[in-house]
Image (cartoon, rainbow, N blue to C red):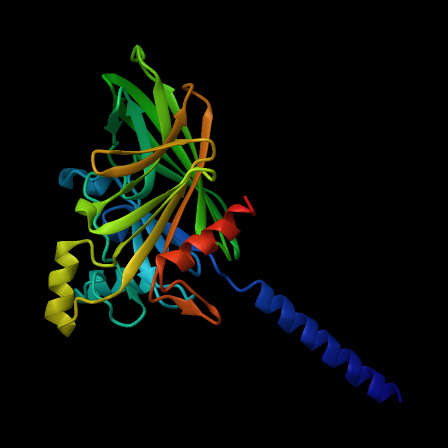
Length: 305
């Protein structure tokens, strides 16, 4: 009888340990990427992202957000960067686990900061320093600092803190602008932007939620189109779904960018959310083959904010 009790206890212990191990499986990942021109990149189950760093300065980058498509909840960034750096295999091509078909250039990209004064949109440059504040299997918090962001002739320091958690398509951004000189004599509006890539997609305003959703071809980067054609003779890779959410914001189109902004007093924290996913992504029963499916998923996400 004691032997049976002992075996039962061991089985229960092993089961509990296995469950704990499964619960602690890493689902969020991010790091500084010096081998790829100082990118800071991160991902969870749904998508991967990056901000551009100092080594890319000669190429006129922005403080916008780049997004990588995934069709697996497994991590892909290290594979992308390793193959690119060591074997010259471009991550702009869908080799089976995802790809970067998104074009940022000097724009807000997919959820970068949008600063508006007198109807003009201001976009910053690459970050100057980075810091990881928290990293667990299910959560990553990091902060990027930008020494100077010029807005209507006034220099500002910019700090953006990103929180990425497992199980959500949304990243949280906490943005702070600190004036370093005389401020413009005009109202300042701050929030997030989605670059519309020459209107190759479809956007919708969600006025009550302060959100903008955008669906476009997954290959908005002409270079990615050429590479996918060259490698696999395939340029039909579905669509990218994107979203920005700034509660209580005004929604408008400026400089081919959908922006959600609200009145901003320098030094305060402007919180917003952004994210995206590929129409080719699926895990179990969850997928987003259409913009309608994406919008319904975002509505459910907003309820948790």
